[in-house]
Image (tube, rainbow, N blue to C red; front, top):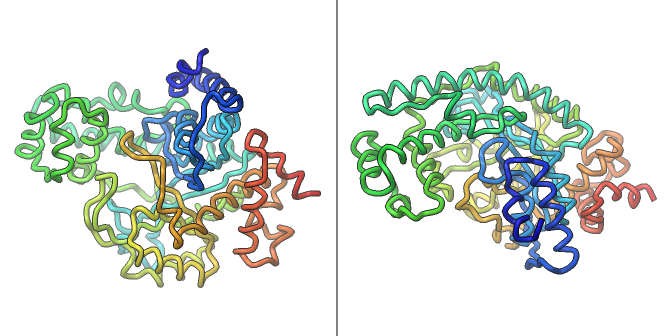
Length: 440
């Protein structure tokens, strides 16, 4: 396989082909045939095809390397099935990696049950991230998530049925098994999300109305969708390589509510159960701060108020539940929002984790906001997360928050700095060998 071939095959549908391509690209990098411009930037929240993304895990690792990132991490909705490939491809290519998953959980049995917290679709249902899953516990996580995926797919089928009722008058229909499932990695442990349904719908609409003014007229006049001027220009461009993702973003923001069905309690397990499970496998559960939204960089969230109006109360509740960390995305928040969430987290001794979720071909892997003075500490946190995951994969007591951690008496910021230094000095091609430095 040539290097040129490998750049294409790194996103092949076949995992074995992808990993072979990663090996070719890694060799080319080590020999100086391929080079990037290294940056201090990191991103440990990249979605893959195992939830919704144009990137296979190996392709995400290579795209992150091309962007100059020091760390890449996979985080998929209700799935951790990208994890082994992400770690293997990253070590072949030569970039640090970390793995986790994202989950909807219930706050319905908390004082915030009636609040829209960080979920645009639901009151009392919250997104959390489970970061730094040790390699030896991945199978346990898969078993934990499997019944949740099954319950979610029951709701997905009902949502497709509701969608088809809305579309029947236009002679358009989406088949769950024939149109939606093939767009997913469900057969390999991946999840199916609302984005998969909307992707299938996007394909149907393009097939029926083409790209351009006719489709826009249907969206505005028939579906009554409000389309931002910037996105309208994207959809007028028939040569736009991101067309399906731009259309999907409009549908998610403005049309999804018309057929969305709220998750059940069985699908969105109690937050306390989710946190307890994460800790039981040595992972780090983190609340995902959204903050009031003025505009969305991905075009799929409308302006709306979320947790900023009760943030102090929320963080106190997170500590009570047992969260050791919060995660947030600097590009999505104002400097005032960042300063506040950082201050409140530090007052409560919560680890701050950053990652910008990548799920569209239009998004950049770069995150220059991390280089600003108010966010640079998040780079250390990401490196500490890498060390936490690799060290605890070999010996659980080296988990950052393990009660028998040999550095447990150090202040959290000292422990994070220590772990960050360990990860930075490790061999990215053989990351688990960093345990030798710690033990020596």
